[in-house]
Image (cartoon, rainbow, N blue to C red; front, side, top):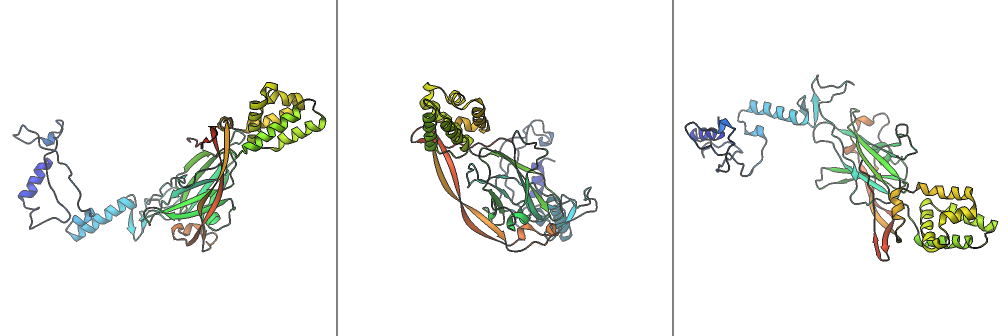
Length: 401
């Protein structure tokens, strides 16, 4: 029947009168809009005008649906069905804060799977800006209030480049509970746990402090529950910022190389120039080349002068190092001015107060682990680039993978 007819019937039967109110229900109707002409159920017999479309005005009280049922037996059955559908995929019963799965709700490995294991979402920490060597990642705990219990998070990270076979090189796997919280991992990686806007929601974080500059890294995360199931993967791929460059030092080296190349170059001067250029990083070498060509190109550019003064073999050994600089950093290293700065950023460093027994990791619940956290500081060196003195900009590249 049309909805307006249903309401009329309720009012006629005085089910919504003051003497017999239904708990949690308040219905008010206004004529707002019309039913579509294609809806035959909206047409009232003997009336040419279409019945109005009911509009939800407001929600002034929220209660579970099963509390609206008066019969206790029906109410409990409805409550059980709703809880099973929401928490256990309709394939099990809610017992306290976990799901007892039906016999038909087991996967191929024989593990119960009626309670889904959500996928964690890995993301860059908004409070820690990535630098050339430091990256901070975080994710929200995916353990639901009822159902599956998360035992651990496994984080994989690896450097990806054209020289690496990504299928053969798997990178490094880190257990959040066993490697990071226990303190058994490297000092280059630290784990943290904090709370979001809601105290019941935990946010886990991992900060990497020893990455290579101008490197493409892939980070992968998945959750493990107390029965050994793995969630779907979450991935973040990014390129670390360009290496730190001392622009004043690069200009001094460019002047030194020009003086060594100028006029007759003895064997000792050739060796000094070669050693100087081989000792600096690839990014510094790129910047030295930029300054050399900016000041002395009229006497021959850097490549030609190096080949002429040092010979093709030594010049090739020096110049091929420039190929290690990415196209992104190459464009930044051609900026008119580069300034270096060091930021000090706080981060959480957490350690577990208890020792998880070996071989029983799956039976421990990560959220129940007692931890001690302290705030520490990490120094993050950065370059700022500009086209004129006093006007600089900072560039970060995140690859859209």
